[in-house]
Length: 326
Ligand SMILES: Nc1nc2c(ncn2[C@@H]2O[C@H](COP(=O)(O)OP(=O)(O)OP(=O)(O)O)[C@@H](O)[C@H]2O)c(=O)[nH]1
Ligand SMILES: [Mg+2]
Image (tube, rainbow, N blue to C red):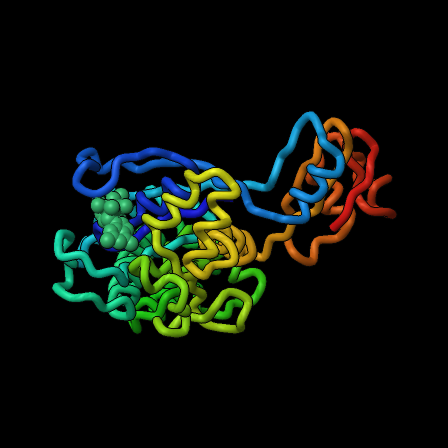
């Protein structure tokens, strides 16, 4: 599973990426190359940690999320941005929004306004999608032999539903499409259709009391709307580099129960409707990723050497033939 990290320039994307994936990519003025970065984060799960401590396996394999960090997208760049094109294949997007003051890092809009930045970037995604949809419709119209039934369905969806939504500046993730249309739309890899989590990067002093609702967002798991998590990216980076007991002390001083980054990774995982089940044994304690609502047969099918037919009647089993829990 892959998430793209995007946002306006200098909002803390690479700082967040470094924290999530334990990378050490250059940030701020040291980031001259403006390259995209790819890294992997472990999905924190206290239940899996408990199983590891119980079984003391030779191998420990938590679920992971891969992150792609791209350089900032400026207002007006969306439709032509090569960097946005790098996010075509990702499953979800993480939009980093700036809510910290720093006179040394001028805000591109001149002042801090997280709600307006959220809308600005959404519009860039919409413009990128709009130019792609227009090009696709032009290509379909140019076909000499007439349209196949499949192409006709595509044309009807793009011209009848998708283009009007984009022209009304509605991100496609807000369209509630039925089964086949939803699958067809997903195949186009349009950016505003991808699930999106907003990560609000606040000043250190605000991290304990700021809430997603303060920015018009919905806390993860708290209902419909644009989901958001509040973090202080440089503080999280510092925390992630401490030893576990120092971490606990630092978090307590800040008034936090857990690193905010743990919430970000978990929220990404859950935003896509994914859950984990575990296989345990002395060889390996491992998390496997499945869609919420998947059947036991489908779950068993994610484990390469498990014959799905025999595993379907019970909970999936690990290769070592040991227990599994959901
Ligand atoms: N004061 C403060 N500075 C921050 C915070 N987050 C990031 N920065 C600083 O902002 C600068 C930009 O951070 P990056 O992580 O490189 O930002 P970016 O969004 O990746 O930037 P681009 O990729 O160039 O668009 C760096 O100097 C960071 O140290 C924050 O929460 N508070
Ligand atoms: Mg960066």
